[in-house]
Length: 640
Image (cartoon, rainbow, N blue to C red):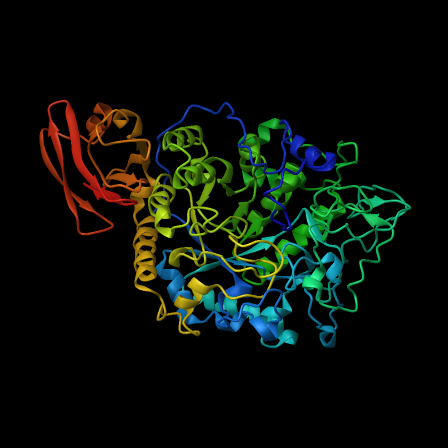
């Protein structure tokens, strides 16, 4: 069983409150990321109209900041900073950023920046101690934020200057032509929230709450009136800090009355699988699911950011809305270029309309990415909530994962892309992130090379951004038992090294000096592919799948996928082999594409953009085809 801030591998029903947030979009509720894929929903008719863009696509590099610069390879389970080390802001130097830039990155998502609950004594800096009974891991979850106006003191060489050190990292990042994304976690905060660094006039979450009632619109939290909080009963022999003695680790935590837990549990003693280290934030959704705020008219799905901002002017808004607006503005003023919003679907869409239109009014170029797992909500959170991008987890990622594991057909890729055609530009693609298993882990695919065809498809099939997770490009396996949680996912809860990534890190040189030959080849593949995605304007152009017309072609199977990308100046054919065996086939182009590309009778030279290979497109009358040969896990990106 995976134990995390989200317990995402468990089938976990949302509370009535969370369902109310979902219902605010006028759609049916859904369980939060169950193992079962959501049923298909009716979608608008697809279009192949290109998305206007001056160059290539956005590439996001997600860095788990605490781990990124750590050269220590002791990796003791539940190890301290002294034992296992920790990455610092200052470790992320020019060489590191140049290495990230090589991967085509336009944004760096610095994960785990905000000051969250952590089991380390920083009382000399005025920071209150955190209780191991309500902290997951020794280093703590980055999604249990205890001070929105500061950063994790673990990351600073001098904790007293932690914010200044992060500001210097922002400047270094910008100097390398990269932009900065950080998390905002609107659905919940740490069980013990206390801001030391908040600006004048800002009040802590819950500071003025009326705790005598379960709900009041301008309370920041919900309360279990008359009952103190009780630490959950542990499962499977779990002990905080692996059983190490700690003065606060006594199975108790002082919170009276108890607050609702982050995932919406209304119990004074939540379940061990609940997000018990966090408390639910109140956005003006009553316990019965009704609302204490103005609703957006349906036609605002078609209105501009400016019109959304105007709608909220002069409105009487719940206090939590204003607090998060102030937080976003604070970090924009620090030079942050955008945000990744955690569990956005558990917060009412009206709040997102307010927050995102406020952000875009302040910075029209701000990058806004949301974690949303319910496909029936995608269009509302994009159009009503004014999100730039959403995770394409349940559709594209889940489909590609099954193909990589040998459990699914590439037919699903064509179906997903067709169903997403009207919003494909807004669906961020990825194969790894901090919540998902590493591809090279035995529990996933067991071989990083199996990601190659999936990465080509994921990165080139649409105009959507692509995200890489640090270590993915060198085949990290996440095999360590670091403490809280299980192997196959790189820990987000404890101090650890990341072995494959450390080979590239090479004791702070960031030159790949310790990479194996296979790891070097893998990184070179990612550099070539992601540079293509980031620089070639054609991948913002039109898309046409070539899968359906070739399904009966000899040698082409449901372990193969082919498509075309094109604009006025460039035509590209992409073919990928997901199989463990080589294959060869004659790829046919449909007559309408042949006409659109204005192909007359003759032979056309094709150049593979991933290698030096060449191929020939043969046009004879009404038919056009290319002879394709693909090694196991190989792809061709053939430019006409």
